[in-house]
Length: 92
Image (cartoon, rainbow, N blue to C red):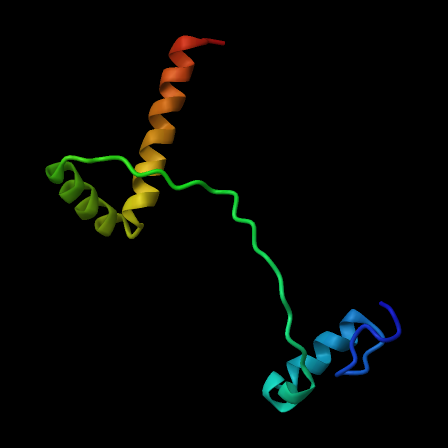
């Protein structure tokens, strides 16, 4: 860790920094913070497909029963189907 890496806690190691923040709140030091600008690059791509209303209702019901989002359920099912198709096309 660089000498001035943690200017608020004055820590000399990551362990000391962790111990400091375990017993302090950022609110105590808010006036010493600086604005940070950064970009987040999410690599997922969202594509919308039309879906029959009855299928959508069934998907919503099943996803609620399983405790997952409809999007996750659909992605899992499509992934399973594509894997099955891939196995049929190119058997080991």
